[in-house]
Image (cartoon, rainbow, N blue to C red; front, side):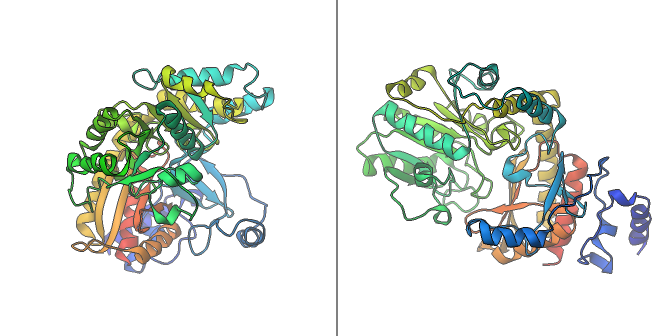
Length: 474
């Protein structure tokens, strides 16, 4: 009771505009969650919103948008404003964004430096086509290449991660003269024809022609048969080549941390062993850094760097533009030369507004030391989540690195039975308490925690407190 009274006084001392308002009555000890847990102060008030309400938008979406487009939560949110690590709904209520637009908002919502770069470029020139010269695309290509090791210095810009992976696989096929590509089970690489073939979850695959794709055993440290022994998983790639191909392949594509697959960090030793195998048969290695790249893992700028390997092709998107649609394929001058055999063109790839945004993102990451922050805050948050795992049996695993973390919920730790329904209830309760988080994994039972890289320790504390209450109520 004493704790409750102290927290009541603490809550009452916070200005109303900074409180976690309108919280649903899901609290512990019969007190509103808003009283027990206070969102960190934030000096920003969004302008009043006078647009359509949530119900009207849902009606329009149902009538005019594809039925394949879904939304989170029983009562979907109408998000109308964003600032750094926070989002605001139609009533001005603030939410801590722990999803970052699916690992896309790297520097923070509406970061002033990035907004300024976008506005200044838009005022001057929006789209001339890359058939003319413009410094924005060249400047960003140079800056991006400087963040990559070895001879990875030639950049092709696209509009998305799907496009980037499609182009990367085509380059590998043309360069090697082989068609077969190996990816990893549980991977997600996009939803066009080629990238859907590389994707290895039935949830994301339509029954269309997807040729030349082979899916290797997933080096899953939580559910996999070899635990954390990456080299044992890697032997499956050798067997695929020996028994499933002509003995040569175009390449191997892999995320260092599977994002859609549930923040699954590949077992140590796996990527180096696979790289050696692929090189022996003349293939190229494609590192899909769409989610793990751009400083998100904290320890390194790119996810593959944690494994001590240098790929032949790197793809990026999402955090590359902080929400602006841009993707990139980076490779060596020798490999890039193959696209001159025919005409390759992308109308919007290298758009000056998008590349100006991407360049601004790199500058902000360096200026504000966001990679270092991702490491420090991400490590702190992971430790807090592991402590929560000791408290709640429903948490089967905590994994990931930096600000790319996953919490897998199970109804039975021994059987690792996916808690598919429970996570939906927890997400709704967390939303009601002011925290937005994603979910993923093949069974849809993993919290995907990928906030903007400006996330603070105070944000982490609030996030864990809210998750603690939600899990206590399941």
